[in-house]
Image 1 (cartoon, rainbow, N blue to C red):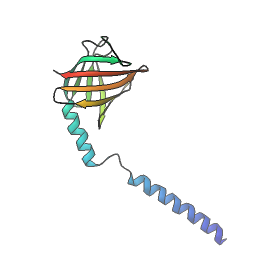
Image 2 (image 1 turned 120 degrees about the horizontal axis):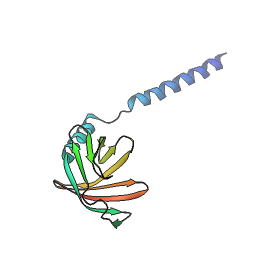
Image 3 (image 1 turned 135 degrees about the horizontal axis):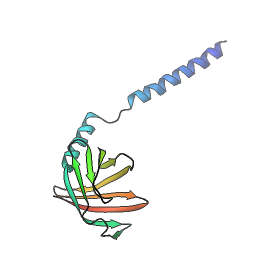
Image 4 (image 1 turned 60 degrees about the vertical axis):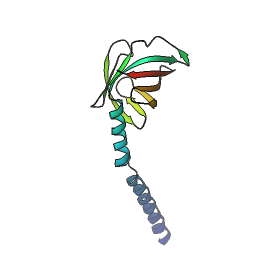
Length: 133
């Protein structure tokens, strides 16, 4: 009887340890969230593609394309031909485009007026050089 009680007690302790681990994890500190907000403020505005690569080779297929990052976590782009607005989420250097077509854009570099984005679409890697207009 005593061994059975110890067995149950060990399971209870294990369950408590697991639940404590889950409760200690968070989705980022306040400082991390503020960095994301500050970073987002840096990308707000209209960015025009000045050069594009598809699979490492220059391509003109995105000539005239743009991104408009709006203050309320929205992005409008004409990458597919006509302008479509998407909800987005920015964490660190990744812009997640939400909706029917989910795309993750990685910001490789950003300055006041220039930005380099990389992403994959339909199995092809793209690299975009953008200028803020």
